[in-house]
Length: 243
Image (cartoon, rainbow, N blue to C red):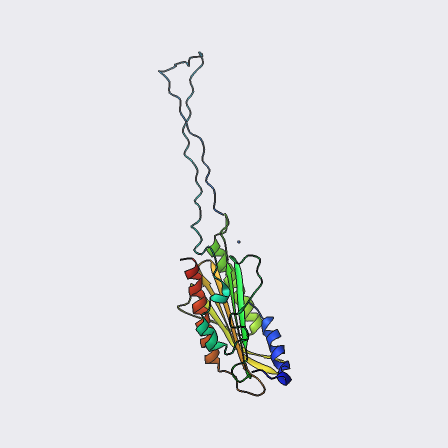
């Protein structure tokens, strides 16, 4: 249970975390016409008395369409992480079902977050999942767009968090972890952000933990493991939504 007289640091941290870094057609085919005229013999004339003409057949010109997008939709972000995982890494979450992010098109962008202060009210935890899907354009395959966005996001996260990117193997097609600490309103939290590309979709998982009122912080290993657990489930949820 939270204690009213000690909510200021928690609110400040919540606002700071919520403000943190999160957290798009088939090419056509054209063909030329083909045809030929045959003459009855050398110097033959058509029925109107004119000379016959030969026309060379032209081969149709075809532009290959890009391969279909690997993922055509996104899952419900608040269901992308299982209840057991939410319970384990965000104990006593204020909204166990998660708080969905506002989105104009849930097929292409979705998000959800969970906040809790633990069973004793002094162990702050914040988990956020952001999903983004890219759609192919004639000159820009969806997967290429996702790769470019992944590179840009990695650069932004490295700059904003001050943490060096560490590659993560066995997760999606590309994945990096950005782990470190941040101090807000005199409260230092242990943070980890996982950026993952799977096909034409990106998954960003942010997980923060802090001990309030002088309580001990979770270890870096604990926070990193929690972020990885949530990221694996979110990546699997993207694949399952398109099965």
